[in-house]
Image (tube, rainbow, N blue to C red; front, side, top):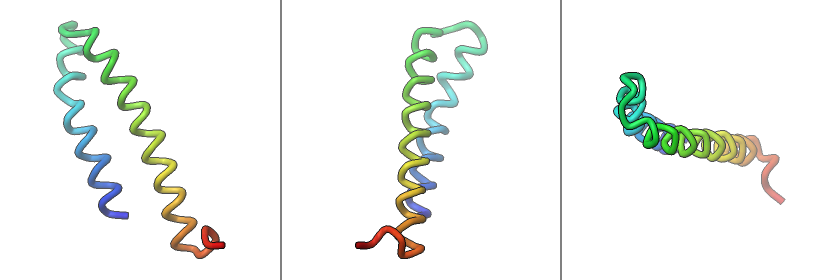
Length: 62
């Protein structure tokens, strides 16, 4: 689980510069694309976390 969390942190840290530029009204097109990638990453994180929780609880095994 910690690897999953660290991966999410790494993604969001890499997005920080793009969002900072957008706040200054610079590279706004880039920030729009990064926003979509961040949304996608949040979905992956949530789904992976749910699967890991199911496996840990034993409910994810057949």
